[in-house]
Length: 488
Image (cartoon, rainbow, N blue to C red; front, side, top):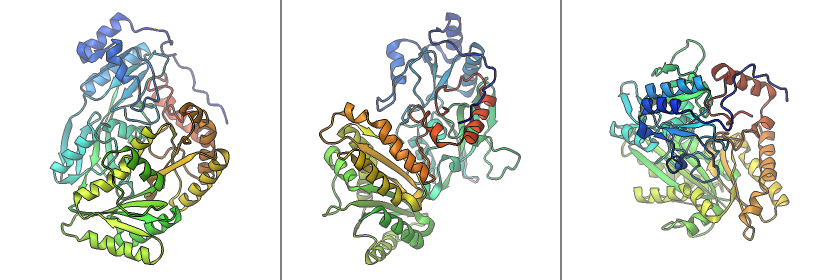
């Protein structure tokens, strides 16, 4: 891989450097002394991710409450060459919001920037701050008889800034797109403290580079997102949800084709689950119930929705699934007859990660390939891993409708967690090499963070990496914004 010259820079603070008393006083004057955290017990919750996979250190945690305060903090850090780790709900899976172990960084928590600044219902947009919890944004849209469609298992605690910084996807990408498609404008504090006011609610704006796309998915390495203009949609008035039993991922792709032909854009979600996923949820999640009498190798959780009340979607879904059963694509199905039953079906899908955590150590892969190649990927990955590790348990599930599979590997029944995790590098390369051969991505929606920062050098071309580093050099020449993340 070709080398890339970052050019002359001024080095950030050394690993052992400490913030001066004068700088701490300046920080306190900006955010308020109660929102400058330096005591170990106060700082500790910001130094690890929710899974406990990453642990870091920081000289302080700052909790600004406005874009002006964020800008003032960043300007001071730029002048003193203090690296900054932006942090929202800290629900990420790749360590992108956790400071490194060096301890020379500060954490800038955006959680106090939590206002809905306004709605333009004729334009179908809302302007929200980065610290807004996703569920609160959904609720605000709902109160206005609109839909903000991003939906994640962590929506009760993840924040919009993090969703933007990782280009979050979730279960409704099939119909509505991910955060890139759901965002019209951004407000960003740049690495030197300047504020880019790009909060434009325009669907057409051909005036040059679409700068907001640089910051969406950048994991805070180019600047700190403080607010966004988000798209709103008509609120669905009717839904139908079904769990469908299948023999294979190939049947799942055929079922996707069938439902699209029958339901068109009303097909909102199309999630695949291997049988072991349900077994883990049934074993570890109280109240979980298997909705079908017999066990099947694979399942699809499908949802269709419409803005028309009384659209009789259950009948539409039943007709589509009957055709799939008659064609030998599906083997069984159950359609929720109430909202409570629909929530129970979704609970089987949404609790897979928690059930897998309770089961023991796992090696997780958030990958994407073209939808047409998902069966090939799963078949070949299963075969390669079974040959290398005969007792490994594959837990595959995810957003097959948009090509994103969470291809997780759980430790063998009799293996110790530490023994299994020691195989992670080999497991990863088997999976990632296959993904690359199928023209896929090693990160579909979780980002790179610390977890895949070095791996990406093997799977992006030298030209791509050089362009990415050139953008970083232009916007953050002193490498102060979330250093050690995303870029190799």
